[in-house]
Each structure stands twice: as structure tokens, then as C-alpha cells.
Amino acid sequence: MLEIIQILVLNDNYIYLIHDSDSMETATVDPALGAPVLNELAEKKWQLTHIFNTHHHWDHVGGNLELKLKTECQIIGSKSDKNRIPGIDLTVQENDKIMLGNHPVVIIETPGHTLGHIVYYFPEDALLFCGDTLFVMGCGRLFEGTPEQMWQSLEKLKKLPGQTKIYCTHEYTQANARFALTIEPENEALLAKAQQVDQLRTQGKPTVPSTIAEELATNPFFRVNIPDLQSSINLQGVPSTEIFAEIRKRKDSF
Image (cartoon, rainbow, N blue to C red; front, side, top):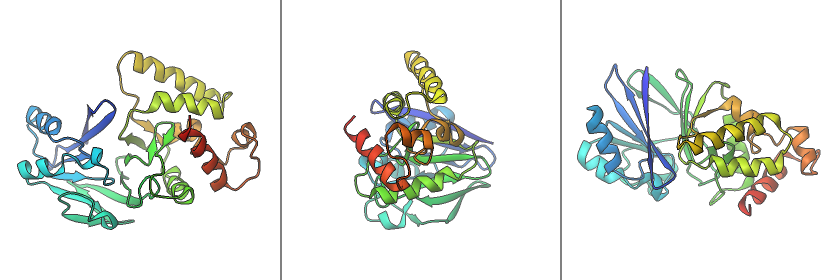
């Protein structure tokens, strides 16, 4: 079994530690800062062996060099982003498989938020570390990619098993829920999820992880093919990419 630790930094960033108790290997995902990771490692008496970077933005790679200096860990990132990932050791691309102990990790390329964005999927453990491609009830802003690219990336993730847990890198859920309700105000699953999210945040608790199944029921960026959603924004029968682009445009100005 893998143990996952969630570390909140920079107000709304999550850094993850993934520990395999059999091999004693430990990976961190998108370390914005080094010190919080080192503190958690010391408390758990774990040795950092890997950094998994999803993309090059500073709030995902800011701790890379400090952690590599102090732990001699291996830094893994996208082949197409090799010049933008500090300290990168191993480059990966679509369908590559790496291992954390005896746990296979499949690389899925998800351009959109950035051109070199990748996600880390643990098929045997039903875990997805998705950086800024997919959020709970949201998706990443298109800084470099096109709506077509992001929609294709999301379509890949939609096909993962419904029980797959989604570990995204930001606590944006409450705002995402408010926006989602402007798109599907009568979606009962969304209404219930938004209420649950408000309760969690009132208690200071994280809303991450979600699951693919929950996102299929509540995330407007996953649901552009749903007739009720199309009707609610008067875009019935329009190509999926155009519907996605319209919802993303609305979110950007929400």
C-alpha cells in the first residue's frame, strides 16, 4: 500500500508525498517549496527518492533544487519541458512507465494549461496526480495550449476508471463549485457536492481528492457532451471543443 501525505503551502497549493512502505521509496509531487517537504520527511523518517513534476510553473518546481541538493533524489519531468524543469534527471513522455517501488506509474501527456504538462497515473492503485490539468469541478487555465488541446487532454482522463482518486495541486474547489452552478444550476449531484464542499471548507478541511466518477457527475469541463448542460448554455449540438472553449471563456471572466 502507498501512504499519501498532503501538504498545504502558499495558501492554496498542495504538495504530495507518496511513500511505498515495502521499498521505502518516497516521491514528492510538484514541490513548490523545499522546507515543508523536508520537515515532513524528517517527521516520518522517510528518505526522498523521486520528484514528480507535472509542469514547469514556479509553484510546482520551486523546491526542486533544494530537495535534490539535500536528498540526492531523482527529478522526473516531461521530455518536451526538459529545459524548463530545474534539476531534471529523467525525461518522460506519453505512455512511458516508471516505478515507485513495485507500483507502476504511467505518464499521460495533457497539454493545455502548459504545452509540456504531464500527469502521473498509478493504474494498480487507482491514483492520479494531475497537477493543473484537472481540478475538483474545474480545469486549468489555458496559458500555453489551445481549447482543442485541453479538451483532448481531459478526454483522456475521463476514460480512466471511475474509482480513480484525483489529487490536483490547488484548493480551488469552492470557487469552481460556484462557477459550475452557473452552468448547471439544476444538477442535483453538483448541488449536493457544492454543499459538501462548503461544509469541508468551513471546517478547514481539504476538498481533495475527488474521483473520476464524481467529476463526471459534477465538473462542467468533463460534461460538455451532456445534453442538459448544452441546453443550459444554449449550445445544443455544437462540437465539443467549441462548448469547452465557451465554458473556459466564461470561467476566465467569472
